[in-house]
View 1 (cartoon, rainbow, N blue to C red):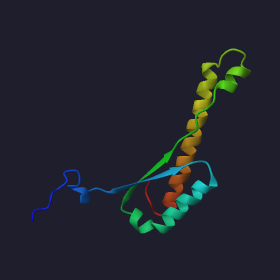
View 2 (view 1 turned 120 degrees about the vertical axis):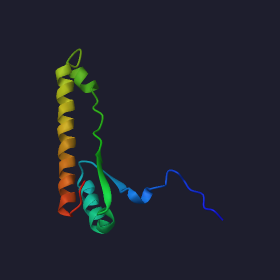
View 3 (view 1 turned 90 degrees about the horizontal axis):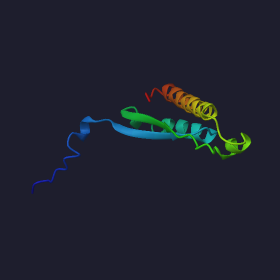
View 4 (view 1 turned 30 degrees about the horizontal axis):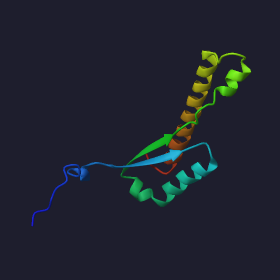
Length: 105
């Protein structure tokens, strides 16, 4: 009896498994990364690790109200730049934790 082949699965042995780890600003998130790396270290060594974070949507309504008319583009840009810095710092911290366990993320 001939086995049916799934074209998507052909060559799957050649590819690294991908693991996504979502992080946020909480200590629970840091603990979850550490726990995962400790308990699944051997299987993660041969995997591609993707670190992922999402920043909350900013409610510009309170900024609009406090400015008595409109929110200036500079204020919006400053808030967005700050969120980008926070996200970058989170990813850097998570990358450092991965390096501590010998995992490349």
